[in-house]
Length: 145
Image (cartoon, rainbow, N blue to C red; front, side, top):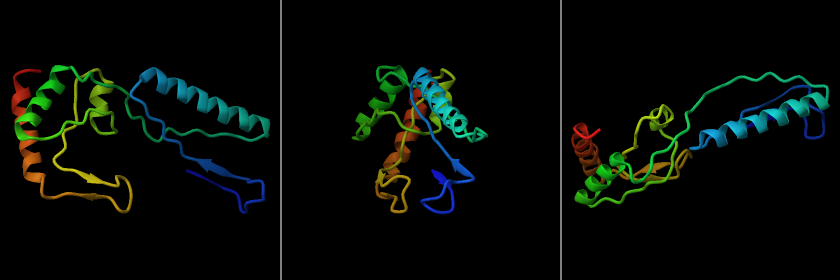
């Protein structure tokens, strides 16, 4: 998000920008942050401006191989319940575990769409099976991790 100025055609006396950077690759995220900060600082100095940087959040980066025993166990539970398994990266609370080097997955209890929009919705019919998914995976993993 970028804000500032008083009109489209006026040099802003003040402006602010909120940037969210994410990656599953720790090094790629560090490189992106370094490059972005360099651009901001260089641009400010070229225009005799000042920059104040505030860290708003720090979501960990990390990933888990699809062949990891935790993932394989969850996939087996999905097969028993007749569920599809999605193994793409996503922004969830499991990022903290992955960033700390701990195995983790995010198990959903339903499906939906239009995430992070005013039109976001969830399907309520699959929730009972989704709860079974979480419970069975938890029991299956309790003795294996």
